[in-house]
Length: 212
Image 1 (cartoon, rainbow, N blue to C red):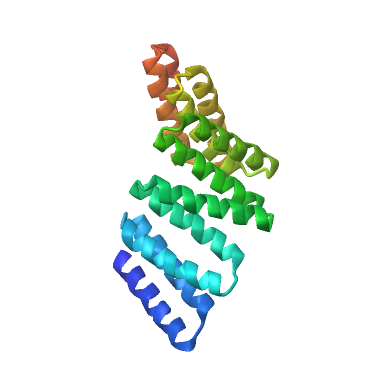
Image 2: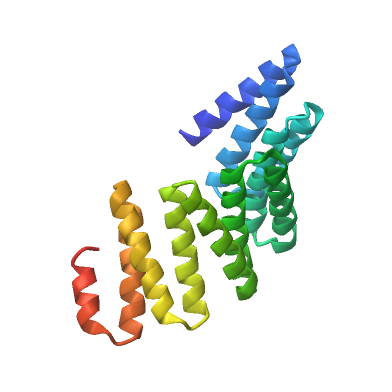
């Protein structure tokens, strides 16, 4: 199915190119980039996103440019190129603010929080994750709120603050249940159980493990 998808997007890109449809060609390159990203082919993903970004800039498509900068940030992030990832995320964040796109702003802040966590800058990780959480709550975006809470739980563990981590995991679990997100709930429950086990809170581990 992956190869079929790649073939379809490549054919679409060629067709759009032949008729001079820059917007369609940008979308095709973006779709190809996302396909490569899902297969952990980061170099290919980055190349496709950059081509899509060039078209978005030519078209003065600021919304598309913001989205593609965020996608580029994700590709660089997964590849471990923290500097390039931060640059793309910061450009996406600036564009989201310029456009008044609060959801895009929150999603990018959440990505930056996770990036800073992986880079070992826990203070910045907390700052951006908390900003994202606040905006997701203002927007009543439960899915985004759950993601931000999961990030904050992991960061709190790294900060050696198990009490806050437990609280964040519990809140994340509750949101996953509200959304019917069984996979997200199971992941948060498992992470919470591991944390409680390390804290030797074995009775609580047993209670939560029954629901994992």
